[in-house]
Length: 122
Image 1 (tube, rainbow, N blue to C red):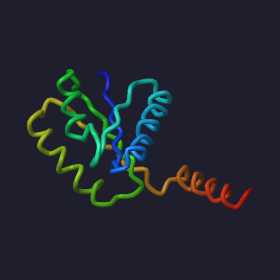
Image 2 (image 1 turned 180 degrees about the vertical axis):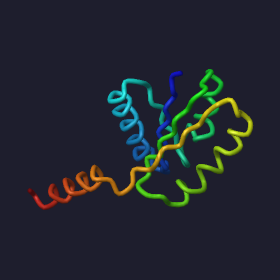
Image 3 (image 1 turned 90 degrees about the horizontal axis):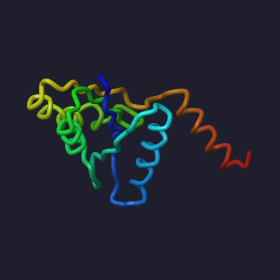
């Protein structure tokens, strides 16, 4: 069974800020070799419920949602799960998997170090 992939960003009132999620989704899609749909918690579309419902309406039975958030704040621990609860109740035949957030990963630390070195002119 093929999984549908959604990458979830916070969203911003600044449209150009939301473009970053589109670029990340394209890059992840290229890396994993399958389409990745961007969705937003706020300020842009599709929202998470809109993206999930669209996947279900197209016949998806397995959906993976990856929150593009650094840490386990309120969105990751509460808000997203509340949004998904109703969808899961309405569509118990669909498995919705919610991955871990980015977290305090070595890759994040390496990227932060790179940005600092750039600022220091190294």
